[in-house]
Length: 208
Image 1 (cartoon, helix red, strand yellow):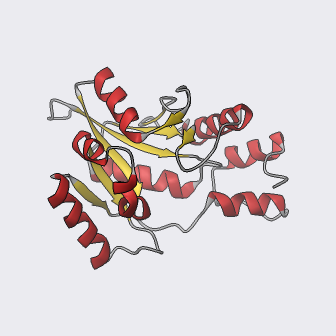
Image 2 (cartoon, one colour):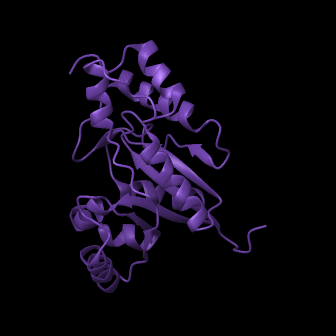
Image 3 (cartoon, helix red, strand yellow):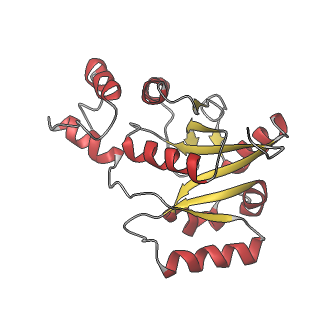
């Protein structure tokens, strides 16, 4: 039984176009490292930096996430952002979740690249006040002194809580998976077989 009064909820957001083992490994590692109660796997809709407005594309991405996590009882599909109209912002997502569930403490999982750019996000001071940031190192940014300097800088400037995620790095990208499908290459072992089957059955990613 958890001893904390507040439930500890992780948030793993992304376009998930498609979701793959790299995403799932980070979420699973965060669940155990931070003793979380569950992790919300949250497909994005329209972000300020990327247009994902196709309704069909949204439904396919939701379906693939659902298939990928159906055998993991502590992963939960969240449609918090998919169901919102217009451009979605992380600060609004956290505000909504906090209002709906005041008994929860949120852990927002992101890559190191996002941490370097978080000050350009809408109202970063509110994001950093409402959630503990869990940051996963990526090969292009590393997990060395530069990343820890950024963590220290943000913690001092915003009184933020930022924790490094100790996870193996899997250099898998959704972009490469889409390219492989388009060019007839194998995607086996890059993502759950049910997701690979869905991509094939639905004829996804066959054209640019």
